[in-house]
Image 1 (cartoon, one colour):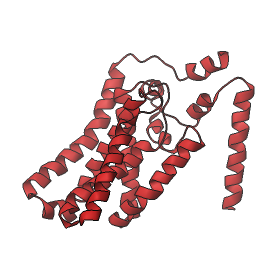
Image 2 (cartoon, rainbow, N blue to C red; image 1 turned 135 degrees about the vertical axis):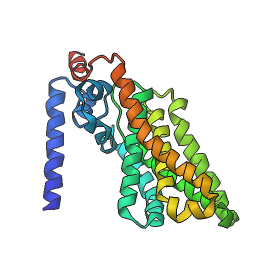
Image 3 (cartoon, helix red, strand yellow; image 1 turned 90 degrees about the vertical axis):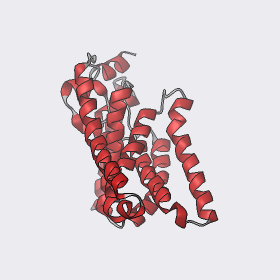
Amino acid sequence: MHFNRNLYNSIKIIAYYSFYKRNGYTWGCLLYHFGASEISSIANHFQYHRLITPILTHNNFGHLFSNMISIAFIGFYVEYDLKNITNYLLLFLISGIIGNFCSLLFSYQDISMGASGAILGLCGYFALYFILNWNNMNYNQKCCSLIFFVLIFMNLISGVSVGSANVDVHSHIGGFLGGLAFSFILTYRNQLLYRMNPQYAKIIYFSSIGFLIGVPIISLIVINLKEIPDNCEFICLSQNAS
């Protein structure tokens, strides 16, 4: 039954794209209809689901495959350390949403999608894990952690290196910071209080809560104060005209 449902959905997606292609629309139009993030739709039409659906939407198979490999590699260790699938899913989802809010705040691309922000949120937890356990690691583990941090840094600045034309670097940075902030909250009682000064731990804890609440509020205020052209219909109409 599950296989038949997936097959049906695949056929429906192919047919849907074929319809758009026959009428002159392009892949970007289809991505928009499948929930890619688009600032005027969120600001002018209150389509707040577009802060979540872009995490599940990808530009092509290569984009999806690279993200799935990253989730398989990083997510396994994060989930194992958390020992709680609910916390793992919350970390992934909140990181992706914070990344999308930061994208709204600092980036004005036509449409954006992908799970990179959420994956970098997992990297934020991984980074905190290494920091908290650094003194208990051997030489090989420390070398591996340094390599990991270099990879995170390269991923974060990848949008700058390509001129951020295809990579939303603001979503990457926001996802990483969102994941790091939520990781502080998750580890506050079990680790932070015992591995650092309780006073500092409490400051970090409440600062993390403030960050996760403040970013969405500030983003929504900023985009609603600005004059944002209504491009939600123009995206497909302009592609159809071309």
